[in-house]
Image (cartoon, rainbow, N blue to C red):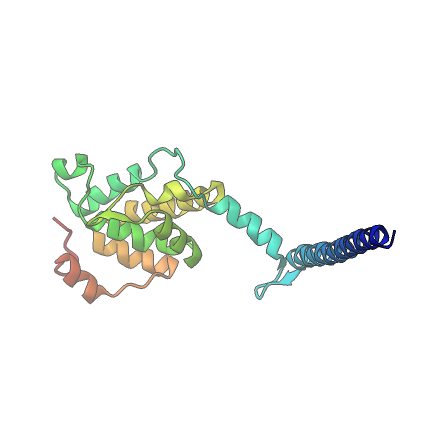
Length: 208
């Protein structure tokens, strides 16, 4: 009988130990769940907190994240050509040959101007995103066009920047004049001497 009671006692102790352990585990789980919920709620509250902007108005982390989601894309989108008119005007200013006009790979001045006059007007984080998503695959060659990684709002900004450039191009007769006038209107850095040396310009002559 004592032996039987001993076994039952041991079984009872084991069962009690298991119950106690499970209670402790349940307690820790409840604490962890509560902490996770508190962290989540704090995150939501923080994202919705109003931020006063230096230039006036307000925003929030949540609003900025929504804007970013509409500004950028993680995978290339199926947008049509965006720089056709830009290239037509640049061809006139730079006196491109017919072969240069039709070539898929335009003269080096084209990507240089696009970077300086279009993409440089985007916020730095947009440029960082584009460079990360669309790196060089070969020397001076990327797999995609940068703008394919822009979202809905990003494309609208791109089109606005291109239109600004095309308007100034239409009002000028040389690449030099365009760069100088564009910089004056939109505050982009422009150093005539360095520009002339880089492109081989003399005074206000056009690029051949």
